[in-house]
Every structure is written in structure tokens, then in C-alpha cells.
Length: 273
Image: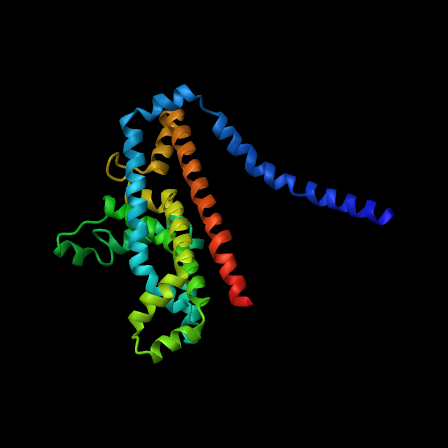
């Protein structure tokens, strides 16, 4: 009986130790959701600048995911093969944007692609001006968010049995056919999970965007940028957009968790078995 009592006490103490962090997360979120009345929320959503920021965020974050799929998938596939010498270097470079302060990423993009930047003269000759445009928003979001897709997809690619790819090669399939008909169908849950995380991260990107793209309504003002302005001019706008971002991020995370639970974890168990 004493042993059971001690175990029960230890279990209760262990559960109680979870409360500080959980409350630290839940209390601010509750304060945010409770900080606006439904009538104010409906009124704010009718403002043109609010919808402009919402539409631009949804558009640019979707474009960022498409760009990431195009340029990030080859990197993910190579990262899934650890035999080459430059693996650690490439893996570190992929992780670097996730640990850089977003403001540093914005400055780096501006110094690289700005009018007086490293590639500015060449871009000017082609008649291309990237800073403070919608394209700059997509570039900033992609720079910061793409590693989430790359690492997730690389995990999915590396889980595929090499014997399957060897069998396909013996049957006459080239690398592209193997990748298209074997690798992608078997790793799509990891790719979709990474794409969802990339979209959610791009949706909330602020630091790199405001430095490289600016904060022009209808052109570069995303929801995080509008929150920054609204905090100074109209707190109701800032709270409304914050609630929208929290809701969208929560939906994205729930979707990712669902895919991981239903597709990725069972496949990993089968592979291990």
C-alpha cells in the first residue's frame, strides 16, 4: 500500500510540474481570444485594409510553399542520402535560416538582391526590382520557412527501403522514374507535413519581410505587418488579425499532427518491424 501511495504522490507531483509551462502558454492565448468582442471582430473584418492583409498573406504563403516544393525537394532528396562528404555542411546550411534572427535574414536578402546589393546591378540590367514588392514577401517567407519542408521531406525520403529503389533500377527505371513512381508516393505524408509547417511559418513571418519587402498596404503588408501597425493605431485590428493567425496556425498544426499519427508513425513502425 505504501508503495502505491508513493507512486501516486510522485505521479501527482509530476503532473503538477507540467502546469507552469502549460499555463504560460494558455493564459496569453486565452487573453488574446477574450480580448475582443464578437461585434468588434465582425466590424474589423469589414475594413478593406484587414482583408487586404489577409488575402496577401494567404497568397504569398501559398506561393512560398510552391517555390519551396520546387527548389527544396531536390535538396531534401540529397539530404536523405548521408554517404556524401558535404552532407554535414549542406545540413547545416539548411538549418541556418531557422536559427538566424528574422531581421538578419531580411538584411541579408536586401544586401543580396537590393538595388545596390550584390546582385543588384545584374537585376537592374534585366529590369527587375525585387525589394518592397510582393515577390520580396515571397522570397523572405521562403528563406525563413523552407527548412521546415526540407527536413521533413528528407526524413520521409530516408525511410524508404533502398532495396525498392535498387529493384526499380534493375527493372530498367531511371532515377527520375524511381523518384516519381516510388519515392514520392511512399513519402508524400512527410512532404505534405513539411509543406503545412512551411505554410504556417510563412504565414507568420514578419522580421525578414518588413526589412526586405516593407509594409505597403495591398502590396507587401501581410497580417503580421498589419498587426505591427495596428498595435500603434488600432488595437482592435491587431487583436483581430492575431486571432486569425492563431486560428490558422492551430488548424495547420492539428492537420500535421493528424497526418503524423495516421500515416507517418504507422509507416515508421512497419519499416522498423
